Length: 432
Ligand code: SF4
Image: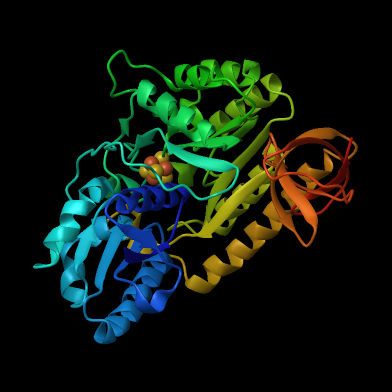
């Protein structure tokens, strides 16, 4: 058996790709090692959303280049979005690198690994390579990732995804349902459906099945389990999806709807296809229809040209919309994108940091407020961890709960818990 050491940076989609890579490599006599010093194959699965993330990948390559001086047979691979974006340039920049492989090309890995015995290769074709019945080596736990589509057609002005993961392509419903059945048969209790814009699901497929239809099919599967999905594009969420989540048994009451900014001019500059009012309408419609629903979002601080007033509109929006939780980031220029070329409008790093800190404080405040709504309520918790003797899990609407009753549970068990108190990041309660 050969040993593969793999590092994963970035989003859930990358984690899922890593599981696909590891699953595939097990068919070719590789086992995963956590020991960095003596692997046969090193892979970094990269993220290109922010420069910081790309820099982390380069620093991994640097480490492995040093290891390779001693361990000359070792092969070094860069995969993921940075590989796709930078391509051949990486082979020039890192002379010890053997293979550059883009997200659409990972199913060629077995062939590519043979070829790099003799040559250095860049494989970054933009095409859709479906799974070839390799097993996926999923991380142990209660949740499994399941990709329902790849790529994105939206071209938000700050985002590299359409350049790295290509245009939108959905997988057939039958293939997704089969994979879901397989996941459930392995004992997972939760499936998270992944797509850059899940509401666009099915547009390239014959008969154009939509996302609601996919959810309905998955909801019919037997057994006690949960389904989550991410991410939703605000104005693409249909009434049918809302109705489906409302009536379904297994679909969790949880929407992740990136807003990015609370100011209409900035949204336009971001090439987002909605304004603040439209975002508000969709949030209100979801809340009106689905009890205990959680709505989370993403925001960028310091987009090129954002004024102080425009930034404060974002802060106000979080309050007004009572968003339960948001991911935040300071704007990071990606040169290939439209916003990345607005160099004369770039905001100073210190100023971006200042805005990000204000944004984070607001997000924390909103999260605490959201958690407080559940004090004295009984929620179904799926136990996913035990730490320092305390069982932990998540509610259907994705609240983290610590169970403080000193009883014994199983990981993967569903328990009804009455919430007694909360903090910014979690809820505490006892089983009923
Ligand atoms: S919707 Fe916009 S931000 Fe999201 S992946 Fe597509 S281009 Fe990027």
